[in-house]
Image (cartoon, rainbow, N blue to C red):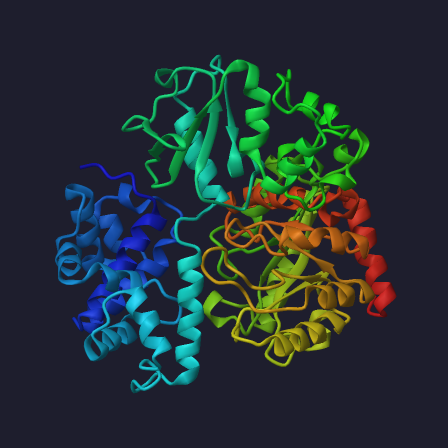
Length: 554
């Protein structure tokens, strides 16, 4: 069987194998080997499942034992050892392994000592204070587990926009473009998290085929995508197309407001624009219909001022092989040039981020020398010297001032000790923001969508501090972050904050994540005049120079 699994997918399989082996107390050396392979697979640029066995064995992080499992997976579509472990493990225990803060060892203790076999039982055990009484747990751990379970349960059945978009495109590839159909629902609004894929059509079902076919339900026609995302097909009569498209697109509050202004909502409309006209309102694009900022864009000129991909001039916040990136600085620069960008900000991890290959002071000097050489060769394209400096536990940055002064700009981010209360989080961020060398605040809350909520921060307090200290706030465009959340963009703009849309790219392919950041930021009505990396190269350089002069660090 020829496998088409990506390195990430294979890495997840190996991660599951290691976790289940640890759960069942198998050979610790093999567990470590498989866990290391799971980590390394995401860093290997070539598709591992397309390698021959010898090449696999010689690839860092794989070796003979792991290679044997990967060949078995390629040839049979399965790994027998994994299958046996799954058969030995209650399904609820596997779900428990997904709970943040519970590794395989702790899950085993809970399973064997409390007899708990699913997430619901575990939550009940926490409420009865039974988890806190287990050796190695305690009340703080129990409270943390409760919070993690509640977050896990609240996000079941939800999918990142990037995943949903890929699945939608897969379905639409087989549909006739001449057929009357449109995306609708959260997919059409380009929501950052989606529960189902929705379309509207006036055509017959046979013209919009999906695997397994459409099944009738009380909500319309339903199916499930190959990636497991529920799909809904709404069917409308041609005369009601525009109204049905408006209603199914949502969101509900926006739709209710618009239709409340229309004298006869049941009358046929030529298109959505005609409905808004009948309501005495300016047409609102689907992506803005979130009952948030849409009515601030009450004319076409205002709507056209919202950021778009075409406005992005440079790529800020990137990693290379100097730390945990897959590609060299040259490769990152050439990839940016090929995409039409005019500058690149290299911001590898700082020294405290040992897990990510953070740069010590000597490595910083050597990297900056490489950037100087590349700038001479690649001009007029410009590479800026930067660092993603860890915000340490006390709010200080990761290098002495003389090293921080050597960078063109500094992105300050929290990567460790994430379990903070609001007071600690605010104090830590404020001190970093007040450091004159901090140019940009990176991923403001540290959230990972559908995985962790991020530390609690007083958004207004932090945004106000950034405004007072001339610190920009990034929209981290990684589709698993999208942080700062777009709901805070209107307030940040009101305060005059510069907002770069940054890919946090760890490979040349990651540069394209800018799209997801722009898509999310547009929902908050982000105007191009507030986007730092929408500045042309000369203006971006001037912003850096003026900021340093204002902070007295030029």
